[in-house]
Amino acid sequence: MRTTLLIVLLSLAIVNAILPLSPPVPKYEHAVRFGNAKSKNVFEIYIDLSCPNCKSFWNNVLLKLINVPSIKDKVAFEVRHIALPYHTSSFELNKALLVVARNVTEDKVDKVKFDFVKEVLLNQDAIYNEPLLDVTTRDLPSIIHDKYISKVNPNLAKEDFLKIMSDRSLWEEARATFKYAASRGVFGTPTILINGVTIYNSGYMGLMDWIEYLDKL
Image (cartoon, rainbow, N blue to C red):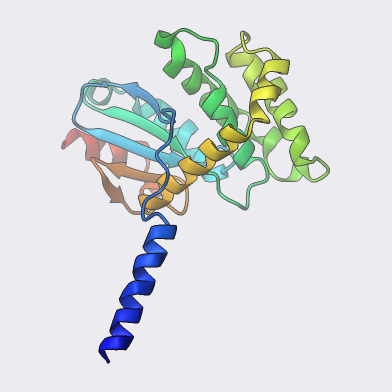
C-alpha cells in the first residue's frame, strides 16, 4: 500500500515538474483599456473579434454604455481577446490586436487598440467564416491589414506588419492570451467579469440592465 502511494506521489511530482500549473505570463499587455483607469470597479470583457455575439454586444451595448455619464467616470473597462477555434480568422485577429499599436507613441496605444476592435466589430462580415472559405491562413494577415490595420494605424506599413505577423514569438504570445483567458474560466464569448466575478448570461443583458447593474457599484 505504501509502495503504491509512493509511486503515485512520485508520478504526480514528475508531471508537475514537466507541465506548468499556470499559463505563460504574457510579455506584452494585451488588454484594451478605457474608462476611468483609476477606478476600483473593473468591467472585464473577453471577446472574440470573429464572434457575431461579440459584434452585437459591442455595437448595441458596450459602445453606448461607456458614454453614459454615470458609468464612464466610475468604471474601468478592460477588453481581452480569446481566439475561439471555430472561427476561421480569430487567431490571426488576436495576433493583429497584439501588434496594431506598433509605431505609435505610448499615449496613443490604447486608442489605436480600441479603434482596431471597433473597426473589426463594425465591419466583421468581411472577415467572418463564410467569405474566407477559399482563403488560406497565410492570406489572412494581408486581408486584416488592408481592411482594418491600414485604417487605424497608417504608420504600420503592410510589409512591416506581415513580417511581424509571421514571427514565431508573436504566435507564442497569442497562445499565452488564450491560456490566460482559459485560466480565468473563459470558454465562450462574450464573457464579462465585474471586479473579478463572472456574470453569467451577461452577454444577453441589455443596455438598461447594465446601467442599472453598474449604478449600484
